[in-house]
Image 1 (cartoon, rainbow, N blue to C red):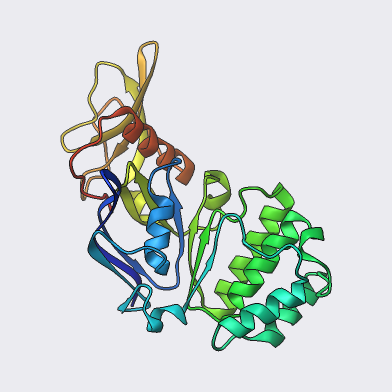
Image 2 (image 1 turned 180 degrees about the horizontal axis):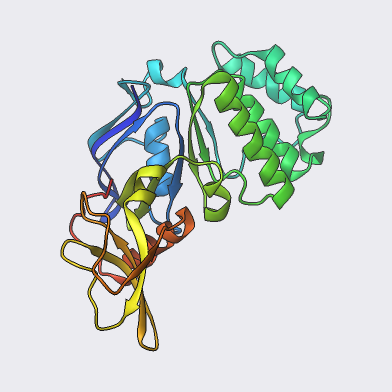
Length: 295
């Protein structure tokens, strides 16, 4: 089953296109990293997935076919925004009760138990919690809705390294214990590499690359060789750098190819190298009218 599907999904704000012709099919049970520069269209895509925005054209479904934002979808999708919106004058317990009253099937006992496990006093005022504790409270409110899909819009952006690590550990536990699928937007490529297994990279509102991380890494490599050589027919150069008489190419291999042209040495790429190459390529080029995502 696909936890998220989009078809030619487009969102415009007046004359500005925030997302263009986005087509995705993301299987359930994945930790999906949504990566791109500021203004790339990440938040627009997340808002469309959770039903906070409506498409200009195209469509988006979740949970195996429910229209985004529908009643069938709302019960199974939870969202944590970047600014983790919480009422600072409320206690953590007040936030739990408010969320319980606004959501069917909210598990209040789970939420209170999770706060105890995190050593967060339920009676403590939200405004007096640390940034990491507020992020954990927002995550607790989302998980207590018992979602099948958890959508996170850079909730760790303002956290210190320990708080970010603890937050991501909580997300991974929810995936392992409760079978939650996760769509996670972040700028922290190095941090995502240790947890994500599916990548969607977006730039200028267009999906540039998408697929299981294992498959994407297997289909790319770094080549080093003399500047006068070309890697071979069908090899797509994503990024090229030069040092003296040597060139360094991050390339996408043609289907079925495993060996580049003679004269090159090759090594595997990691997720950060792959993502940065596509981001730099998209930033250096004029935006095309349409692009086929690389899967």
